[in-house]
Length: 272
Image (cartoon, rainbow, N blue to C red):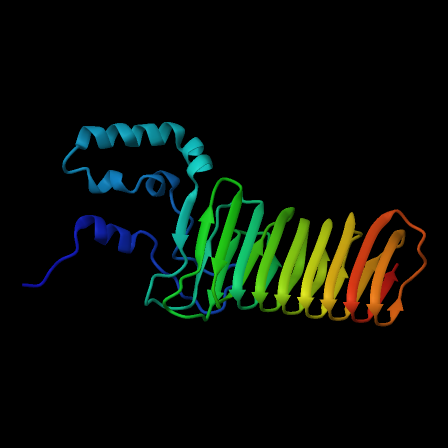
């Protein structure tokens, strides 16, 4: 006799339907919007309704009254894709999120600016390892294996990216703070306003092209060239390198720029 999934199993399968639009972009349709925190915070409520309706109603009323508090403390966790599912997809993120944390062992990471809904998308990677997305009221954390991840973030966000192997690209964004740490991979920041900016890599090229004057810049690399383009003038440079050519402008400003490398050239240009 064929077995049928229990109501709770069927609910979990349909709780966050997958959307696979191909490459994500601003304005792309989303079949998987950010979930209702009251459902995710206590998913057992609905499955137990047949045996304890009054208790379920009371719990739902409590969540309705204090949903914001429950969401802020517990947060929500979603699997970006289900085991054996399509390895590509897109998620809409909570609209008020301002802190984004990305951790991946292998795969490229791209962060872009958006004036619309914050989005997270992934492409590729093994089917048996799902990128995981965790959210609370102000922070989104994404951890993956070898999938390429793309994040569309709002103005004023704080972004932290940590990867072992893979390139990191930050483009067309206006951030409060930016932190990038990678073991092996290039880091490229293009047309970005990034406030406090910190980039650390063991092996890889670092190319920073900032559109607005940052509040501070810190670059650390063991092996790799550093190319830094800064707007305006007024920087105070601290350079430490053991092997490589150094080309920097006059050191007569207040904004701290620290660059340390063991082996690699350092080239800094200031643009009016």
